[in-house]
Image (cartoon, rainbow, N blue to C red; front, side, top):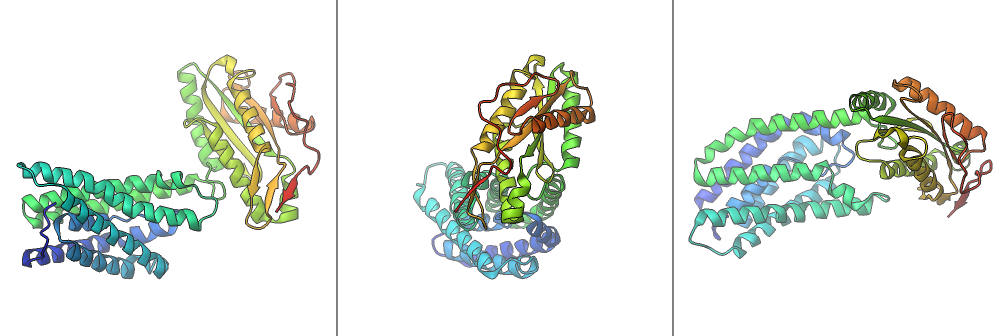
Length: 399
């Protein structure tokens, strides 16, 4: 944006200021950042982008690169290494930031000068921000995708980390504008808000971890019950119905006994993926333990329960589980899975969550007793099944 092609004394002073301020920010937030790195399953963003992006906009590329190297060396010594981050991973992250800095330098060279300097600066910042994010984030996410079999590119790319990166880069653009048009020392005002933002991000991650089942990524029982009660309250206020589905994987013990618990965990994760794909964003999916899952559907019409939405969702889940061909880390591929589903709904089967769970559990028992691999709505007539029930231990395994 404002960088001169050849560095001068002012550039070196600004580089020193950005390095010192970035170091102060790291020191203020290092404990929160260490903890955040330990608890996050996918962690590829840190808030030093505020300073490195500012350096990329304001300084010649070689000087901005020196700032990146200094900032990331300090970050490794104070945060990454104590948090257990491998050296090669930190070096890769540093390299992607250096490449992003040079990409911003190219943007600055390509944007032509115009009669209004402020317009050019705005264009440079607005173009450089997505370029920086793409070069840095796409490289890191691509490596995560390759090194983590089973992970998907878009969920990694579109998760909360990329939103945090874009927010951090936006702050970096504002810092660059402040430095360019006012006093560079005003950048000190950004340090404390950034440290507080780091703490806030950590709190949100801790809340998510407390609510989440570690094996499947679904809600754990306590979180599901709490949110389920709130969902029922909303349905009562709006005169809508809600449905509860309890699902149990048929003969799941056979997977664990024959191929071990690691293969069983892969199956649980695949089933969790089915549940997430088949319900709406405001519905709730959780794991109640073992091979038992639970789903809450809200905002239903009363006639959606037996012959409409609730049964339709339950049947879709049953068919999708039956179609699974799960790659495992220890046992090749596992197919031939089946699930039994019990359905209960408000207000027909109760108005409170515990009553609905008991009714759905009774319906699940009916499905199990009738031969498994089917859906039963509490006190409903048996629905014709398109597929025969899976025989005992009716699993097929392949490599």
